[in-house]
Amino acid sequence: MGFATAMSDFDSGEVAVRLREEIARQRLSRARLAENARLSVSTLEKALSGRRRFTLATVVRLEEALGASLREQATHHSIEPSLAPAEMGSYARPAVRWIEGEYLTLRASFGEDGAVYAYRTEIRWSSAKGHLVFAESDRVDATFEQAGFVSMPHLSGHTYLMTSEEGQYRMIMLGRATREARMFGLLTTLQVGQGSQLVPVSCPVAFVPIGQVEEPVFGLMREGEERCSHCRSILDSALEGDFCRMRR
Image (tube, rainbow, N blue to C red; front, side, top):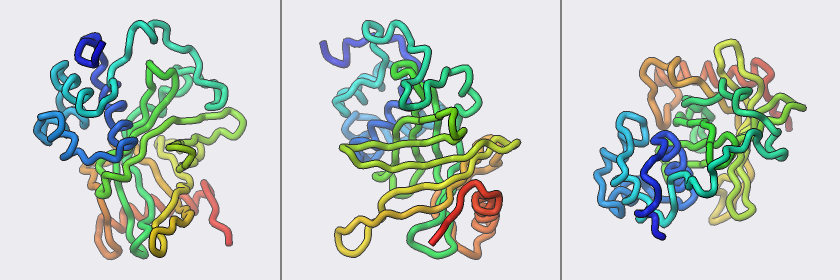
């Protein structure tokens, strides 16, 4: 049975999360995916942003282009797991609903001193997987968009956004949310060094609920720009509020 014959009843939001995961996992550009799926880039962008629901025809085309299913299979997932796996903290969905949503994500630029890099991160419960997942979007370097699982152990009270790809990990560790539901912490990943060398790198990171931002702007904001100063003041709260520490 192919993807085109799969069930037609699906959650559009769930499809968007899974699609972002596949885009990140397969390192696809949205333009290339739209071309392979015989869709316009505008249609794809509107569906991913929630401005338009995914139609069954669109989902089928995307599944065929990706070679992966974007819909929950009723035969395998008729009973939704009540708890996330133990290795992710054994959390129940009612206890973590507060974190679900879209966030303006801010971090320091790895390439320009004083610059701030902004993009979107969505955290959502996956009914099929039985735990929280996350997916990044609106990154200038779209081929490096990340998607993965969310761990929320009770012991530390911290939230971990983990990407695992063939044994390679990238992690964001966030402290407890503030009264404004903002989260601050540390991002650890790999940066391209000399030649093809990859170098471990860490920097503070901030997650701001997208609804708190009147007109979110994504991309690189350079030092001296008004919007950069505002985002820098938010990002600096990570260290100033002791949500994370940098030591030498």
